[in-house]
Length: 234
Image (tube, rainbow, N blue to C red):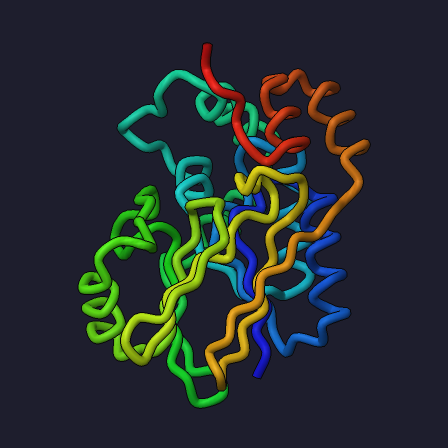
């Protein structure tokens, strides 16, 4: 079975549409979204409706939870805090209810392989695990959940590694990739061979940049979308 895996859509409709078009061309059997449908970008409502209407399996990311619920700990000053309230204001009760309906994990067998997915880490959607770090922690998670595939969204950097007989992977970010180049990150997973293939999908920046400016969102985001990284301070 071939599974399309997306994460960190971040309210970027052109990137999501381009990613889904590529996955359709790849002939994947299903698509799984690892959270952060909203945040940063100018299309939170449209992205939610796209995922919803396409019937894509999705879990909640840290941004989805922060928008849907009043977290007691505020975000630090910066781009995130500047766009949080704006994002929440764009959504009606239907969209907020959809975000609240998302589970924190996804567990299922695909083609005989058991898969478990989270945004961040179990119990902490805001975590940013080092996928190149000590393998022991990932082996323990695979064992705990009885899985052969562990998918973790949230780092905005595509990476896959074999851990024992299993696979740990982050598909990167569709809407706010930090790979150093423009485009949406897409992963195609062969659930039988555990081969993860990463694609960088270009999309039209024009409509995105127009909407960013029209809504008065932080100008620094334009640089991220163009160059795939936040500018260095100083």
